[in-house]
Amino acid sequence: MKEQEQRLLDLDGNARERLVLWIRRRMEEYGITLEALAESMEADAAATKAVMYRDAYGNTWDGQGDKPDWLARAIYAGQNIEHFRC
Image (cartoon, rainbow, N blue to C red; front, side, top):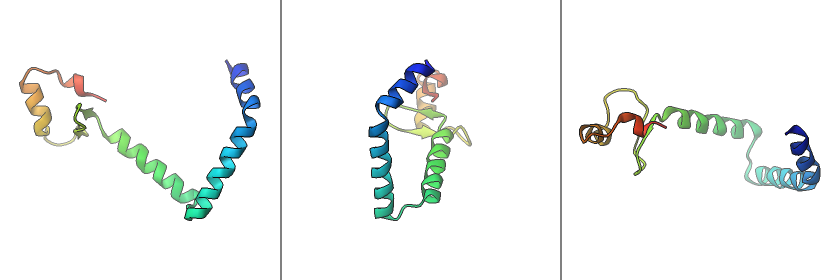
């Protein structure tokens, strides 16, 4: 599989370089530092990890504290809590 990935990178290396250049220019244009970008990515990852349960309407719960009403109602109606696990 690594050979195939390497071939794709070789074939698309020019596109990758253009994309990197475009990203660097946008970062410069908007004053985005690598540190700010890293912090933002870490915050996004932490927020994503925090959500343990989600329903079809976008309601979420991190599993801490009391169950939210939307989840309590679903469980009372017979739904298994594992159905909502992310």
